[in-house]
Length: 210
Length: 128
Image (cartoon, rainbow over all chains, first blue to last red):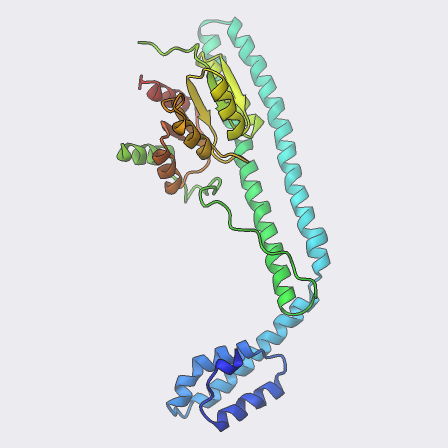
C-alpha cells in the first residue's frame, strides 16, 4: 500500500523516513492518511503546511500509541469469557422471570374470567373488562423479550468488533471468527416509541395501498 | 350476515405468552375454536391439514417467519383467499409495505388492545 503513495521529492521521502524512525508505531496506512490530507498543501508550496503536517503526524502517533496501550490493557478473556456471557445470562434470566410471572398473572386472569362467566349484568361486564385490560398489559412480556434479544445481539456484535480490533493490532495470534452475516432487514423487532409507527399510521399506510 | 364465530382460527407466535393472550382475547369475543402454532412451518402444515377460517400470525419467528408463512398461504391454491392478520412488533414502513405486497389482510402492531383485535377481525371477515 505504501508503494502506491507518490512522494513528491527526496526531501519529503526523508521526512517520512524520519517520522518512521521517530515513531515506530506508525503504520503505513496512518502515514498515508495524513499525507493524503496534507500533500496538496505541501505540493502547493504553502509555507505553513510543513509545521502543521508534522504536528498532525505527531498527534496521530500519540493517538495510535495510546490506543495500542489501551488495547494491550484490555483483557479479552475477561470480556469474552466473563463480562459478555454474564450480561447475556442476566438478560436471559430477566426474560425467564418475567415469563414465569406473566404465566401466573394469566392463570389468575383466566380464573377470574371463569368467575365472570358465572355472573351477569354489570358485575360480569366489569370483571371481564378488567381481565381484558390485564391480558392486553401482559403482552409486555413479548415486547420486552424481543427488546432484550436485540440487546444480546448488540453485545455479541461488540464482542466480535473488540476481538477483531485486538487481532488487527497483533495482540493475539488467534484470528477471531468472522462477524455474523447481517440480519434480515425486515426483522427489526420493536422500535423505540419515537421511531415507531402506531396503529393509526399503519392503518393509513395500508388504506393508501388499496 | 353475522360472523361465523364457530370457525377455526389458527394463531401463530413463538412466544407462548402471546398465544395465551390472543387465545383468551378471542375467547372473550366468542371465538372458541382456536388452534396454535409456534412458527410458520408448523402453521402451514396445520393449515394444509385442517379447515381454518382465519390466521392471526406474528412476523418474527424462526425458522419460518410470518411473512414466509403469508407468502406460502397466498401461493397455495386452496389457502390463497384465507384471511390473514399479521400481529407484530415490526412497525417500520418497509415491513407494512412488504406484508401488504405479500397479500396480508390486515396488520396489527404490538402492543395492541382487544378493541383493535376485534375491529381488524371484523374488517377481514367482511363486517368492518
